[in-house]
Image 1: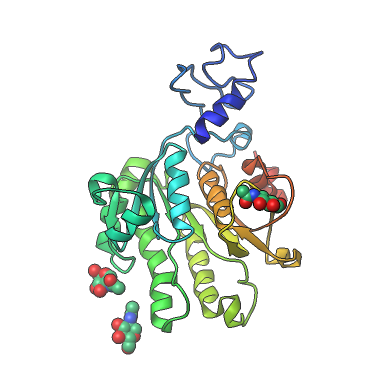
Image 2: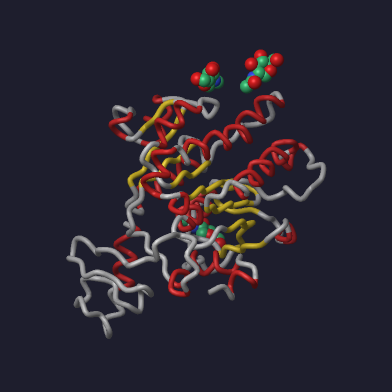
Length: 308
Ligand SMILES: *[C@@H]1O[C@H](CO)[C@@H](O)[C@H](O)[C@H]1NC(C)=O
Ligand SMILES: *[C@@H]1O[C@H](CO)[C@@H](O)[C@H](O)[C@H]1NC(C)=O
Ligand SMILES: *[C@@H]1O[C@H](CO)[C@@H](O)[C@H](O)[C@H]1NC(C)=O
């Protein structure tokens, strides 16, 4: 559905469209595009790698590029929304889940096995993760402990689990298929990681392990998008003005909250963004944000924006 909305928007720009509105034109596809059919919009041309600093790379975002994506924590409250939006955006989407029954209830699968892209396992098992990640170029990590348990479990899920997941994405076969530059890690973390001793209700030591996971991803050599939401709401997405920032400055927004579905939306959009980014996100009542790519651009440092 997302795709058709976009197609409708794109086909309003027909003046320079050599494909007669069956395809987005060069104004919409900064790097050029293919002609399509009424059923298949075809592809925009994109630079070879996500990290390309070609000026056209950053102007353009095409959700019609199909990727093979693994979502971990896919039956969770945020993970399930990411999974559904990945599917809606046309990506070949797999789910890494601990329970097939929960996957059936939350994701609407029927067999809920590998034939439907549902992979059973937990993030302590590198073998299970490697099996699920074989052939993927993107992993969206939405696992998290629910509530406060023993410290070793928090560390195992929030930090070591992330290391295992990234290592599984970067397995030799995926490197051979996509190159290191072709792999990307999308990570749902949290605001609050600048607090030296976060109170329990603000996330406590979970935030310490999340920050360690962020540091690991940032140093992994893979491209990444680290999305750090404020307080998470179960409200509808696409219905608020989104605000992005750095280093917990958005705690000044009262209340510093955001809908899980908007977080999912930003995570899915960040898949094609041609830079590695790390951003805080909250929302305020107001006109819904329509251009997530422009929002992501706001988070670039000045030296990235000037890059050629
Ligand atoms: C997670 O997987 C590991 C390795 O397969 C296994 O030893 C462990 O018991 C599993 N933990 C849970 C909570 O299922
Ligand atoms: C955490 O520690 C407890 C108690 O020592 C142990 O039983 C459990 O297996 C540990 N869990 C993990 C994930 O390391
Ligand atoms: C959208 O947000 C407004 C407040 O800004 C709220 O009144 C309305 O109920 C929301 N719509 C949905 C579908 O949640």
